[in-house]
Image 1 (spheres, one colour):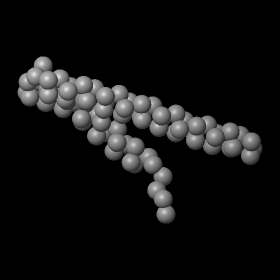
Image 2 (image 1 turned 180 degrees about the vertical axis):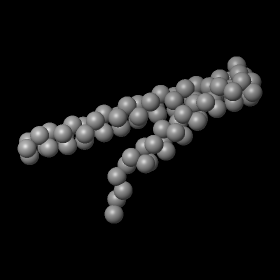
Image 3 (image 1 turned 45 degrees about the vertical axis):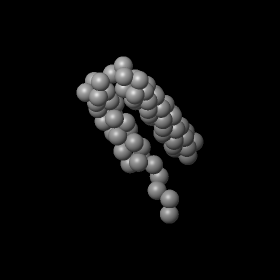
Length: 77
């Protein structure tokens, strides 16, 4: 029974690592998209209104990802 418990625990741990990598990758992609949109605004390609319209959902998604990440991170004592 210990082998099964260990295997399950390892699987759950590995799943957490995979989810963390995926969330980190998603976070990086969103930050990249935000950077591109902000640069387009600085170059005058997008108006401020267009930039805000396009970045608002990305910023919200980024906020949700970082909040989720904070909740799932182990606390250091």
